[in-house]
Length: 449
Ligand code: AMP
Image 1 (spheres, rainbow, N blue to C red):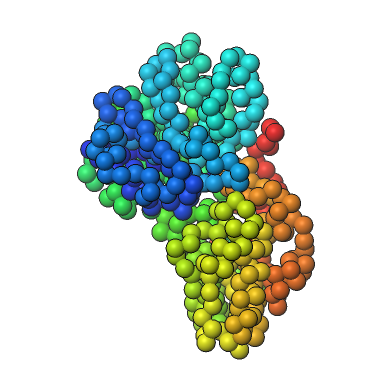
Image 2 (cartoon, rainbow, N blue to C red):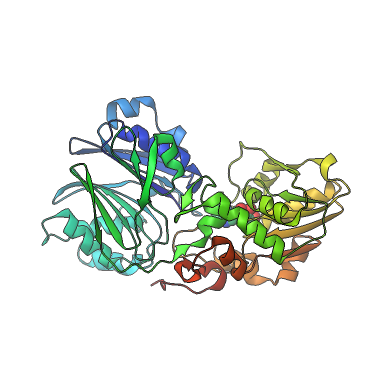
């Protein structure tokens, strides 16, 4: 998934990028980095780890100086955690210096890469983002970076929310489908912020201005912001941002994530009622939709499961063994609350089924009379090619088993998923503007590999 941020023309640009990345840490915990621009000279620090582990005060005072900065947090994908794959990606090239951050996945990485290699390019990383740097560097017939960026993005396909820092400018670009979010804010102490999520605006004292539109390039130059529509906008915004990924206090694609999740819970209660004593969320991912379920059904909401906040997201660990033990370390039941009770347990999604199975067993061992699982999204059946790190479809439990089989596997008394139709009702927007490919396998851009 990843997060990106750009700070344009603010005295403490790198520090503000750091605060922004801290607030978007949930979008990627494997690595992070910041490039700053000090009078046209770009400095970069990146490493594996959490934002607070990587950066020190000294970095900001001695290296990451200047009034422009871009930053990135990287989401882990199994087996590929090389430090080389941390961003920003920086290069010196024909027109000076450049640094790029990217959220999303390019669907034609290998054809473009093979073509570049034939023309003599050498690559240091496995990242699709490195293709973009090469496309820009090798476009030597064009004399401006802006023209080169335009040529480069015409050759790439798939999902990209990009921020590019040059010696004097900053560019923010979103692919024609706008798969991943990207919003612009105005900072009270001066300049602009561009970020994956608006929760970053709060920490740096910025007001939301607008989203970068699908297919648009926004150029920050001489203190001003101007816009060029590069492609016709064909929105296919990622529905999973609302379901799981974005932080509830963010407004994503123009709507508040928390409110949208509460609506999903309400729709879930309308579509899939249960006779139960209490609604229990799987913390934290099921909390907002469980509140919605409770409001709509009138069944009391109780925090029947506690979460240990020092563990982090379980799914994010690359091996099954580590994931299993981490679920146990992370969640535990409030026994006296749930003993003898009929529970409706709400989570946002089931991926491999590990979390649900463990939770249901734990609740039954704690004395729950019945556990009815309700999921605030449709069954996840397909891989995502646009930047959500869904596992290979064989590992997605819903691609192998029917709902009844999953119910039996996770040892629930009943199981049901929100339908796509109810999901659309809860976002109160046009269905055709969203990508549901992980649920309905209708892929807006076919991957080329
Ligand atoms: P699993 O145990 O594999 O079924 O994972 C389900 C849990 O992972 C749910 O509680 C979700 O909140 C969470 N989840 C769903 N999708 C993702 C994702 N792409 N990355 C990280 N966590 C996720």
